Image (cartoon, rainbow, N blue to C red; front, side, top):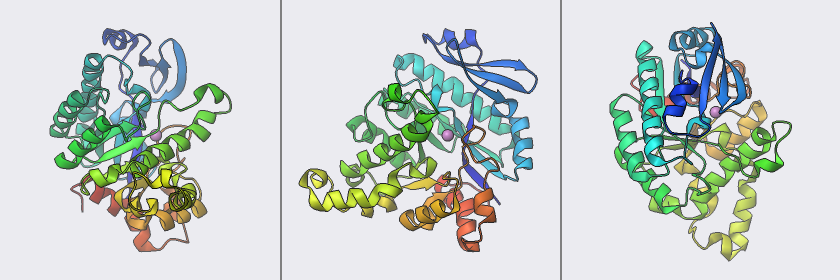
Length: 332
Ligand code: CO
């Protein structure tokens, strides 16, 4: 059995409908002809996509081809709308979440979804996450920051505490990358910006002492193997030991907090995956492919499936057990 915890969808929202939510240059989907479409960022063409991104029957067929049993799909991050008016963003989130819940009805055993919330207004975000969970979502998908506020922001922590108390698993995904003006070429926003965003998001929780204030029950996972975090944990640890300014809000060594979160396996290399397993522990890594986007694993789960280095118990944990436990899926 294989579960893919990092896969995206984009609802079939056209230009007129997107504009009706009150946004200036909204993301929307231009369906060109049967089987393909263009993700639009306002008037700009953003990415050529195939129908499995919005059509759940086609998605299931691709899952069959890729031998994926269960997929946990999350909204494409460009849909987050955190910079918009919170009333507009709430109606927008509901539209996207209802689309996802309906898509999952096509096969409730194999398709699950994460909702998005208007995180710029935590009260509204709490209401929408609870409404979505009742409608069948299995967790919430959040960006790495909310218009420049990191996860050590008291409002972000309040939302995470609500998720912990309500039993809502959280997946954090990079978006709206820092210093984007310096990364306009060569996909640098994906190659440098995304791993840095995720690293920053994890460190903002660790070094602010947020994990000390959050319930241990919180289930939180970071995309793309946690970005640059694992590779630089030793650097952070060294800084914590040697500089008061690093440890002033963080009472325990940074490495002791790795047991408080999970990461996906989207690191594209077996040696890197083994290192990640060493840092995070095998119970805190879950297969995530970033399907169906161009920097995703081409055959989701293949690296773990074919690895001769990891044993069967670890393979089962990464491909199935950890995800079922994390998202509380009812499959066995
Ligand atoms: Co992704």
